[in-house]
Image 1: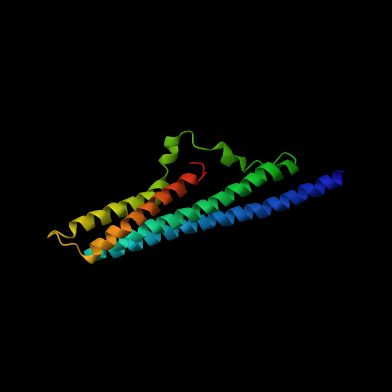
Image 2: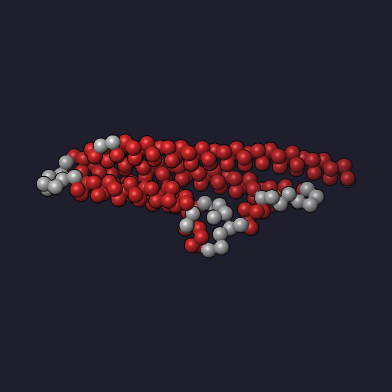
Length: 180
């Protein structure tokens, strides 16, 4: 019986090691998504600031924010699932338990206000809202003589879709169960 327990213990530790490597890989991917998001948004803002006629390109930011926040949320949900498996299944097969993953559960935000002040809200939906406000202001001020250009109508027709993407990025960040 002791030999079976020893084998189960060794197998659980080997599985734990492989799963921790998977978590580390996913955390690295999260950092890459964040870096790519910041870079892409910076490039779009740079293009828009290069000339007033290029401001409609700001409509892309909401989509970029939505896609990035969904990928980040998906990676975090996978990490959380692996951590839950380690905490609930593997930990029981090791004498003394593994317990490290229980930190995620123990360090949830104390209040809703604490969650809403996390920088992810600025990084994803916040930057989308800033771009929507900027492009809206541009659209309304671009025709001082009352004539509306094709650019104006493009912005007016695409703005609601960009606003939906901004709301979806807020929802994606909201679904994160990170300890924030």
